[in-house]
Amino acid sequence: MTPAEELHQQLDALRAALARSQQQLAEMAAAQEELLRAVAHDLRAPLRHVTAYGALVREQLGDLPPAVLQSATVQEALGFVGTMDQSARRMGLMIDTLRALLHARCAPLCVQPVALPQAVARACAGPMAAETGGRAIDWQVHADLPTLHADPALLQELLAQLLGNAIKFTRQSAQPRISVQALPAAVGHVAFAVQDNGVGFDPARAGLLFGLFQRLHGESEFAGLGAGLALCRAIAQRHGGAITASAVPGGGCTVRVQWPAPAVKTQPPQSWRGAQE
Image (cartoon, rainbow, N blue to C red; front, side, top):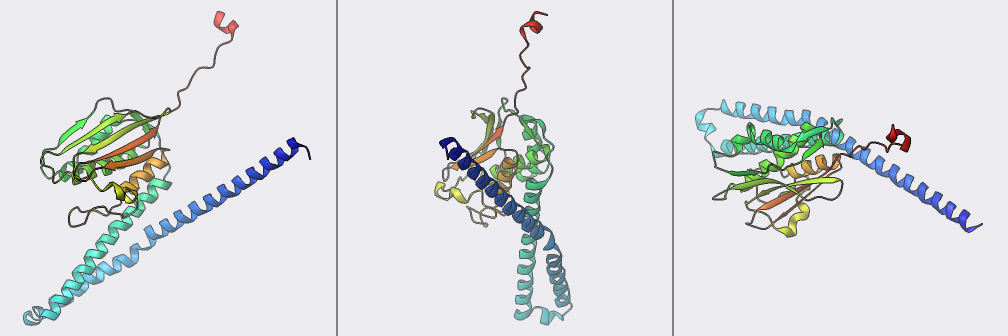
Protein backbone atom coordinates (compact mmCIF):
# COMPACT_ATOMS: atom_id res chain seq x y z
CA MET A 1 0.00 0.00 0.00
CA THR A 2 1.39 3.37 -1.00
CA PRO A 3 1.60 6.22 1.55
CA ALA A 4 -1.18 8.04 -0.30
CA GLU A 5 -3.46 4.99 -0.14
CA GLU A 6 -2.67 4.50 3.54
CA LEU A 7 -3.50 8.15 4.24
CA HIS A 8 -6.74 7.83 2.29
CA GLN A 9 -7.66 4.75 4.31
CA GLN A 10 -6.97 6.55 7.58
CA LEU A 11 -9.11 9.49 6.50
CA ASP A 12 -11.98 7.14 5.63
CA ALA A 13 -11.69 5.53 9.07
CA LEU A 14 -11.73 8.94 10.77
CA ARG A 15 -14.78 10.02 8.76
CA ALA A 16 -16.58 6.81 9.71
CA ALA A 17 -15.71 7.28 13.40
CA LEU A 18 -16.89 10.90 13.26
CA ALA A 19 -20.16 9.85 11.63
CA ARG A 20 -20.72 7.24 14.35
CA SER A 21 -20.01 9.80 17.06
CA GLN A 22 -22.39 12.30 15.50
CA GLN A 23 -25.08 9.64 15.24
CA GLN A 24 -24.61 8.70 18.91
CA LEU A 25 -24.81 12.34 19.95
CA ALA A 26 -27.98 12.80 17.91
CA GLU A 27 -29.54 9.73 19.51
CA MET A 28 -28.59 10.91 23.00
CA ALA A 29 -30.04 14.36 22.31
CA ALA A 30 -33.26 12.84 20.99
CA ALA A 31 -33.56 10.59 24.05
CA GLN A 32 -32.98 13.59 26.32
CA GLU A 33 -35.64 15.63 24.56
CA GLU A 34 -38.08 12.71 24.71
CA LEU A 35 -37.51 12.37 28.46
CA LEU A 36 -37.87 16.09 28.97
CA ARG A 37 -41.10 16.13 26.97
CA ALA A 38 -42.49 13.23 28.99
CA VAL A 39 -41.60 14.89 32.30
CA ALA A 40 -43.00 18.24 31.21
CA HIS A 41 -46.34 16.82 30.04
CA ASP A 42 -47.09 13.52 31.76
CA LEU A 43 -46.58 14.72 35.34
CA ARG A 44 -49.36 17.28 35.05
CA ALA A 45 -52.25 14.86 35.74
CA PRO A 46 -50.92 13.32 38.99
CA LEU A 47 -49.89 16.77 40.19
CA ARG A 48 -53.43 18.05 39.66
CA HIS A 49 -54.67 15.12 41.76
CA VAL A 50 -52.34 16.05 44.61
CA THR A 51 -53.48 19.68 44.70
CA ALA A 52 -57.17 18.78 44.26
CA TYR A 53 -57.20 16.18 47.02
CA GLY A 54 -55.29 18.47 49.34
CA ALA A 55 -58.10 21.00 48.96
CA LEU A 56 -60.68 18.25 49.63
CA VAL A 57 -58.87 17.23 52.83
CA ARG A 58 -58.93 20.84 54.08
CA GLU A 59 -62.61 21.05 53.23
CA GLN A 60 -63.38 17.84 55.11
CA LEU A 61 -61.41 18.94 58.15
CA GLY A 62 -63.16 22.30 58.08
CA ASP A 63 -66.50 20.56 58.68
CA LEU A 64 -65.36 19.23 62.04
CA PRO A 65 -66.76 20.73 65.23
CA PRO A 66 -64.79 23.80 66.37
CA ALA A 67 -63.42 22.04 69.44
CA VAL A 68 -62.07 19.19 67.33
CA LEU A 69 -60.84 21.52 64.58
CA GLN A 70 -58.69 23.43 67.06
CA SER A 71 -57.12 20.28 68.45
CA ALA A 72 -53.39 19.84 68.07
CA THR A 73 -53.80 16.73 65.93
CA VAL A 74 -56.09 18.42 63.38
CA GLN A 75 -53.97 21.57 63.25
CA GLU A 76 -50.90 19.42 62.65
CA ALA A 77 -52.74 17.62 59.83
CA LEU A 78 -53.68 20.97 58.29
CA GLY A 79 -50.03 21.95 58.48
CA PHE A 80 -49.06 18.78 56.62
CA VAL A 81 -51.67 19.51 53.94
CA GLY A 82 -50.37 23.07 53.60
CA THR A 83 -46.81 21.84 53.11
CA MET A 84 -48.02 19.29 50.57
CA ASP A 85 -49.93 21.99 48.67
CA GLN A 86 -46.93 24.35 48.71
CA SER A 87 -44.62 21.62 47.41
CA ALA A 88 -47.11 20.65 44.69
CA ARG A 89 -47.34 24.24 43.51
CA ARG A 90 -43.56 24.48 43.43
CA MET A 91 -43.40 21.30 41.42
CA GLY A 92 -45.92 22.80 39.01
CA LEU A 93 -43.61 25.78 38.51
CA MET A 94 -40.71 23.39 37.91
CA ILE A 95 -42.73 21.58 35.25
CA ASP A 96 -43.55 24.94 33.64
CA THR A 97 -39.81 25.63 33.56
CA LEU A 98 -39.13 22.29 31.89
CA ARG A 99 -41.75 23.08 29.26
CA ALA A 100 -40.13 26.48 28.64
CA LEU A 101 -36.74 24.77 28.33
CA LEU A 102 -38.17 22.24 25.89
CA HIS A 103 -39.69 25.06 23.84
CA ALA A 104 -36.37 26.91 23.78
CA ARG A 105 -34.59 23.80 22.51
CA CYS A 106 -37.12 22.45 20.04
CA ALA A 107 -39.50 25.14 18.80
CA PRO A 108 -38.99 26.35 15.22
CA LEU A 109 -36.95 29.54 15.13
CA CYS A 110 -38.26 32.64 13.42
CA VAL A 111 -35.00 34.58 13.17
CA GLN A 112 -35.17 38.25 12.29
CA PRO A 113 -33.30 41.47 13.16
CA VAL A 114 -34.17 42.65 16.68
CA ALA A 115 -32.88 46.00 17.92
CA LEU A 116 -31.55 45.29 21.40
CA PRO A 117 -32.34 48.73 22.95
CA GLN A 118 -36.03 48.39 22.08
CA ALA A 119 -36.08 44.75 23.24
CA VAL A 120 -34.59 45.79 26.60
CA ALA A 121 -37.19 48.54 26.95
CA ARG A 122 -39.99 46.04 26.32
CA ALA A 123 -38.51 43.64 28.86
CA CYS A 124 -38.39 46.39 31.51
CA ALA A 125 -42.05 47.30 31.00
CA GLY A 126 -45.22 45.52 32.05
CA PRO A 127 -44.87 42.69 34.57
CA MET A 128 -41.17 43.42 35.00
CA ALA A 129 -41.97 46.89 36.35
CA ALA A 130 -44.01 45.31 39.15
CA GLU A 131 -40.98 43.29 40.26
CA THR A 132 -39.09 46.43 41.23
CA GLY A 133 -41.41 46.83 44.23
CA GLY A 134 -41.48 50.59 43.80
CA ARG A 135 -37.68 50.86 44.16
CA ALA A 136 -35.88 53.56 42.24
CA ILE A 137 -33.43 51.66 40.04
CA ASP A 138 -30.73 53.47 38.10
CA TRP A 139 -31.16 51.94 34.64
CA GLN A 140 -28.22 52.49 32.30
CA VAL A 141 -29.19 51.13 28.89
CA HIS A 142 -26.47 52.17 26.44
CA ALA A 143 -27.48 53.48 23.05
CA ASP A 144 -24.83 51.51 21.13
CA LEU A 145 -26.39 48.11 21.84
CA PRO A 146 -26.28 45.90 18.74
CA THR A 147 -29.07 44.53 16.63
CA LEU A 148 -29.33 40.77 17.10
CA HIS A 149 -30.59 38.26 14.59
CA ALA A 150 -32.80 36.18 16.85
CA ASP A 151 -36.21 34.70 17.43
CA PRO A 152 -37.97 37.71 19.04
CA ALA A 153 -39.98 35.68 21.56
CA LEU A 154 -36.98 33.67 22.77
CA LEU A 155 -34.76 36.74 22.95
CA GLN A 156 -37.46 38.51 24.98
CA GLU A 157 -37.52 35.55 27.39
CA LEU A 158 -33.74 35.67 27.75
CA LEU A 159 -33.80 39.40 28.52
CA ALA A 160 -36.68 39.00 30.97
CA GLN A 161 -34.72 36.37 32.89
CA LEU A 162 -31.47 38.36 32.96
CA LEU A 163 -33.09 41.65 33.95
CA GLY A 164 -35.38 39.92 36.42
CA ASN A 165 -32.35 38.39 38.13
CA ALA A 166 -30.65 41.78 38.26
CA ILE A 167 -33.74 43.34 39.83
CA LYS A 168 -34.05 40.53 42.37
CA PHE A 169 -30.44 40.47 43.47
CA THR A 170 -30.18 44.27 43.87
CA ARG A 171 -33.07 44.26 46.31
CA GLN A 172 -30.72 44.85 49.25
CA SER A 173 -28.71 47.59 47.51
CA ALA A 174 -29.19 51.11 48.85
CA GLN A 175 -28.82 52.54 45.34
CA PRO A 176 -29.56 49.71 42.88
CA ARG A 177 -27.97 50.08 39.47
CA ILE A 178 -28.47 47.89 36.41
CA SER A 179 -26.66 48.51 33.14
CA VAL A 180 -26.96 46.91 29.72
CA GLN A 181 -24.02 47.67 27.47
CA ALA A 182 -22.31 46.48 24.32
CA LEU A 183 -19.02 44.60 24.61
CA PRO A 184 -16.15 43.86 22.22
CA ALA A 185 -16.66 40.49 20.58
CA ALA A 186 -14.81 37.95 18.51
CA VAL A 187 -14.92 38.24 14.74
CA GLY A 188 -18.33 37.22 13.44
CA HIS A 189 -20.06 37.92 16.75
CA VAL A 190 -21.61 40.73 18.76
CA ALA A 191 -21.81 40.82 22.54
CA PHE A 192 -23.53 42.62 25.37
CA ALA A 193 -23.58 42.46 29.16
CA VAL A 194 -26.14 42.90 31.92
CA GLN A 195 -24.38 44.22 35.02
CA ASP A 196 -25.76 44.97 38.47
CA ASN A 197 -24.44 46.09 41.84
CA GLY A 198 -26.31 43.45 43.83
CA VAL A 199 -25.22 40.69 46.18
CA GLY A 200 -23.12 38.83 43.60
CA PHE A 201 -22.06 35.25 44.34
CA ASP A 202 -19.06 33.16 45.29
CA PRO A 203 -16.92 32.69 42.13
CA ALA A 204 -15.90 29.24 43.39
CA ARG A 205 -19.51 28.12 42.86
CA ALA A 206 -19.88 29.67 39.40
CA GLY A 207 -19.99 26.20 37.82
CA LEU A 208 -23.44 25.68 39.32
CA LEU A 209 -24.83 28.92 37.99
CA PHE A 210 -26.26 27.63 34.70
CA GLY A 211 -27.38 24.26 36.06
CA LEU A 212 -31.09 23.50 36.10
CA PHE A 213 -32.69 24.14 39.52
CA GLN A 214 -29.34 25.15 41.02
CA ARG A 215 -29.33 27.98 43.55
CA LEU A 216 -26.41 30.01 44.89
CA HIS A 217 -28.52 31.79 47.51
CA GLY A 218 -30.99 30.48 50.07
CA GLU A 219 -34.67 30.52 49.13
CA SER A 220 -35.40 32.46 52.33
CA GLU A 221 -33.21 35.27 50.95
CA PHE A 222 -34.33 35.28 47.31
CA ALA A 223 -37.31 33.49 45.84
CA GLY A 224 -37.07 31.47 42.65
CA LEU A 225 -36.35 28.01 41.29
CA GLY A 226 -32.78 28.51 40.16
CA ALA A 227 -33.67 27.81 36.54
CA GLY A 228 -33.62 31.18 34.77
CA LEU A 229 -29.98 31.11 33.69
CA ALA A 230 -30.29 27.50 32.49
CA LEU A 231 -33.09 28.71 30.22
CA CYS A 232 -30.95 31.66 29.08
CA ARG A 233 -28.11 29.32 28.19
CA ALA A 234 -30.44 27.08 26.17
CA ILE A 235 -31.75 30.10 24.24
CA ALA A 236 -28.25 31.45 23.56
CA GLN A 237 -26.95 28.05 22.45
CA ARG A 238 -29.97 27.54 20.20
CA HIS A 239 -28.92 30.67 18.31
CA GLY A 240 -25.26 29.64 18.20
CA GLY A 241 -24.32 31.99 21.05
CA ALA A 242 -22.85 31.62 24.51
CA ILE A 243 -23.41 33.09 27.96
CA THR A 244 -21.07 33.45 30.93
CA ALA A 245 -21.21 35.18 34.29
CA SER A 246 -18.76 36.60 36.82
CA ALA A 247 -19.30 38.17 40.22
CA VAL A 248 -17.82 39.21 43.53
CA PRO A 249 -19.70 38.53 46.78
CA GLY A 250 -21.34 41.83 47.67
CA GLY A 251 -19.92 43.43 44.53
CA GLY A 252 -22.55 42.65 41.92
CA CYS A 253 -22.76 40.35 38.93
CA THR A 254 -22.00 40.65 35.22
CA VAL A 255 -23.63 38.33 32.70
CA ARG A 256 -22.03 38.37 29.25
CA VAL A 257 -23.90 37.21 26.17
CA GLN A 258 -22.14 36.52 22.86
CA TRP A 259 -24.29 36.24 19.75
CA PRO A 260 -23.40 35.37 16.17
CA ALA A 261 -23.55 38.29 13.78
CA PRO A 262 -25.25 37.69 10.42
CA ALA A 263 -22.95 36.97 7.51
CA VAL A 264 -22.40 40.02 5.34
CA LYS A 265 -23.54 39.40 1.80
CA THR A 266 -21.08 40.62 -0.79
CA GLN A 267 -21.58 41.10 -4.49
CA PRO A 268 -19.52 38.80 -6.70
CA PRO A 269 -16.69 40.66 -8.41
CA GLN A 270 -17.49 41.87 -11.89
CA SER A 271 -15.44 40.75 -14.83
CA TRP A 272 -13.21 43.31 -16.47
CA ARG A 273 -15.55 43.48 -19.44
CA GLY A 274 -18.59 43.91 -17.20
CA ALA A 275 -16.88 46.66 -15.26
CA GLN A 276 -16.04 48.52 -18.45
CA GLU A 277 -19.60 48.26 -19.72
